[in-house]
Length: 136
Image (tube, rainbow, N blue to C red; front, side):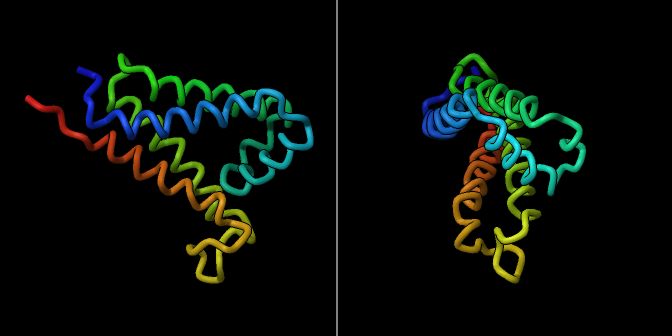
């Protein structure tokens, strides 16, 4: 069974958050997409090959697909957890690689990086879903 009541809070909060984030990026203008892309390029240089418009569209579509998968009970928990873990890992990597987001130790968030540091919670949720054991 892909759905269990004890997983509902994890899938609901992360799925709704990510789906809303993707939906809000649907109307992203070129300047906004370019800013997000520049941050992402710090961690994944290959993303520079995309135009800002393409990057914004792909990001919005990816977030909406992941959010929908997390909210859909028929999607297996391990698959949803794997998707969330991969996505959140990329977000945390962007946070760690973007100048000015961390204090001098390279881990603790600076004032500017506090908003991005919350992605560690998404990583924790993804890992919890991925490592959850099925009841027999």
